[in-house]
Amino acid sequence: MFGSAQNGVLLAARLLMAAALLPTGIARALNVSGFALTLAGAGCPAPNAVATAAVVVQVFGPLALILGMMPRITGLAMAGFVAAMAALLHPFWQFVGGSAVTERTFFLADLGLAGAFLMYAMTGPGAWSWQGFFGRSGGGSEPARAKAPVKKAPAKRAGGRAPARAAA
Image (cartoon, rainbow, N blue to C red):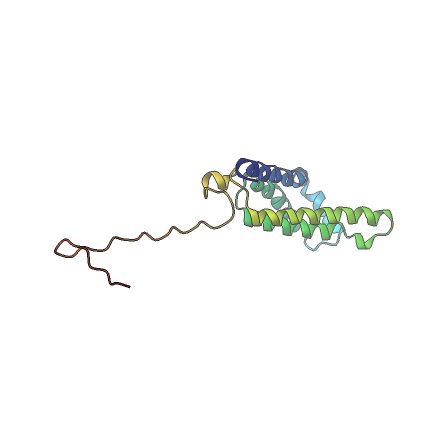
């Protein structure tokens, strides 16, 4: 894909990934203590601190994702967050029967989302993003290319002629 089609797909992917986390993040922000109780029930140490940190990541991460800001940091942080929460909240290995199947499905879906965040961290947000508008012109995560050095014309001698070149 080239040009605007690629940028449109990257924007759609960012919006879909953000849609997977932002509504839950807002709901958890409105009830941080309830989320802390859920984490405590799952055996998480310091559930209040973890719940607060998780809410911050789950609200501001998708907003940075939508805008296309700091793609490497956002993508890596969101991938780590999703993988950690999947292991903490969906321990399918502790269940049997239908519950194990359901928890494994949620666990694998979260790991797939973590993979999408890793791909975002490596590919960048595209030109239709904050980085594309205000950052580098391409909007990708690749480093800016260095300009080729400018060759200077040979200096002229006092007589107005350029120095003679040695024959090869």
